[in-house]
Amino acid sequence: MNLSLDNIIKQAEYAFESAKDSTGLENAKAHFLGKNGVFASLLKGISNVRLEDRRGYGSSINSAKKKVDFLLSRHRERLLNKELELRCSSEEIDVTLPGRGLVSGSVHPIMRSWERIEKIFRSIGFDVIDGPELETDWNNFTALNSPLGHPARSMQDTFYLDLKDKNDLQLLLRTHTSPMQVRYSRTNKPPIKIISPGKTYRVDSDSTHSPMFHQVEGLWIDRNVSFSDLKGVYTSFLKCFFENDDLKIRFRPSFFPFTEPSAEIDMMFTTGSNRGKWLEISGSGQVHPNVIRNFGLNPEDYMGFAFGSGLERLTMLRYGINDLRCFYENDLRFLRQIR
Image (cartoon, rainbow, N blue to C red; front, side):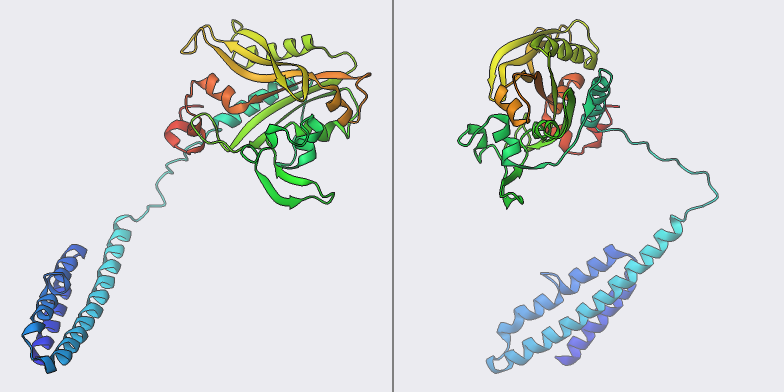
């Protein structure tokens, strides 16, 4: 038996050494170690061995099998090194050749819209501000006239954290960029004329919603800022952003806790796939007196307007994109289409 096993080991070593590539080596492995290989056949024959000899028979076969396994690993490593050397020599780089050049990248569609919006509003005197995405419950809700018990505070809409700030205020991921209006207005005197673009977070995820998305919100506070100023500013912005003077725009009465009166801003396209359709673009309105008080200002002296728009929505309409998820899949085929 031992002599027979020694011959099998020698045959396996010779087969492994004779293999010219990885495919040949795997074929040799299958012959000796496969399901129907030499060692499998030997183990199947254990039923023909006397009961008292079976333990020694099985032990001898397993010992020989381990030796063949070791030989296989050694020759597999040898072939891999050989193939690597051949590959390195065949793919040798000639450093004297001229360079192939670099593929230029492009700005992400959402960032392209972000930069365009900032440019438009800066041109009419608005400042651009930025701030933390981790906010207090007070800045995100209470200061904006959304008291305890308001539906927007539901955990189905808001990502709350098991953390509080130094003033023992509940922390959360901001659901809009309006908290920046609170922060800025409490530390700056009117006139206040700002936009605050940035990331926001809500518990949503489908073809038209994402748990992380982008907003741009605007605020203009002064002594004589009316709803007509809001209509003029935002109408001009949309026409400039979409490069279309034929847009039809309407301000539809609505409700928001932080503005009074409030309006949804809808837009109708006169060309393209959205021709003849009214599409909601933004929420807006005169800043509520309670919010102005929370800004640290007297609503008898100051008034103003605010608006909020989704950057994804504006980008989708500008470039004809119909699925929000395209922005976050990092598919270069999609990203290269918009330059």
